[in-house]
Length: 588
Image (tube, rainbow, N blue to C red; front, top):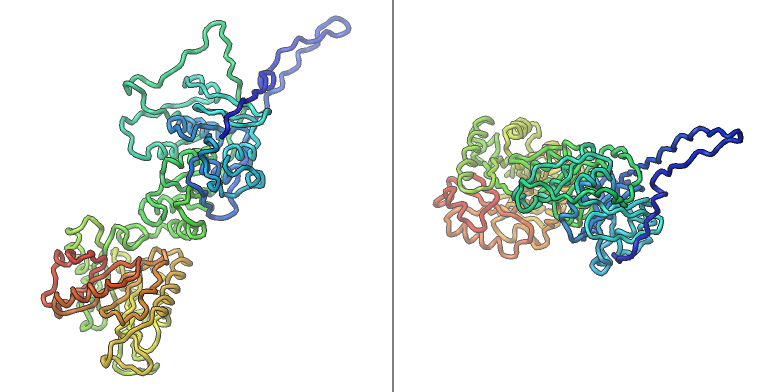
């Protein structure tokens, strides 16, 4: 921002003037008029019209102006600090929150990219301002009466705007702000991002002065300047009297805790808006983030910075986090810092896999035991899982002629609900015969609406109109797989469900025709290719390597251990020596 001289309104504009009462015609003095109390100003707050807003940009000054634009219709006072002085920003944040005023940052115009302008709810005034000067534009839009500067800044303002330099002395600063400023305890070695976290915790109803640890000794207290001596006049102009505006209901601000977001966070707290510091730009990743957002139950969310992506995408992610419903193992993403170990089969047909060899409680106990064996081998969370065959390839055409036996939905409800209570994930496996995967998936939508239920497609059992099982190996075109992904992603997004696992079974390349065009772009899904080869370990390794050739980006991998068919079957330790280490291991 250009540095220019600043005109300051004379003291008569802000200070009361004592006057001698005029005499009446009879020589008596008229009563002294009652002094007019100084006006008290209040900022006008607002929320964006959209449920979710992303304050775009990367430069600190741009983010600060964008947050101010999103939350403030107008403000009598704004605080300005240098964009390149973090210590000044921290002190300015305390001041801004105490005043309920937006915090803006002063940056030379040459250092601000012309394309990095605030994008959150721009007003006509902001839109007409120079793109490379977000702070000046925002001060103009706010219609400030005064600017309080902290640090070495000289903002460009009109002649009718008072500029006040914040005193370096803490007591003088408190007097200027007309508040009491508490001092928090110092941290000798604050962790990275502690500044932003400290600002996010500021409370405008209990003003606190954040001050960097003093030098040379933490016990020496903040540095203070000398008070004005006898006969010396304090020429610091007063700030307009202000009171805090009522905080908007239902608002929440998300920050990654990046240093560039500090001023924007301060402005949010100055407006009385809750701030949650998330560990990832995807609020579904971390259990603590999910629960913090669920506790806030926001009706309006503002995220700081381009890292959060498009507002439309963030909107449903926040809505999902706000449910507070998590996957087994925590969080709402299937394979972020976690893996799965599953038992495969059908509860009513023991011959199809070990899942059908025992009742529900025994199955839960058994799969937990398997998961625990793997848990000892990795720092990541290992989640137990069931892969349940719900449609079974049939030797006969059946009444519907599709060579697939669709088992009743109600058969699996007790399994899904018991698994949900026990922290077990469930994958529904489809063997569709001559029908298509989308048609069969929709038959089990009631189960897919559970938060712990995903879907598996088994192309080996997907027949062409003239084929029958066991005479040839089935296959599916990738377009049908992508149609399933579209359906499952929309279902997940619409119902604000945690991410769902979509498993694609494969042991030959031709089983998924056009696999290179597999759509893995749905953030609602975790797409996994599951290698189903059995037999010798040399042969299984060959299948594993072959399936990786030309594999689409964005997939994770699964490995199956066949208890009776593998020669020999790998131990858990040997299974996790497979590279890349499989995210999903199943037993049949």
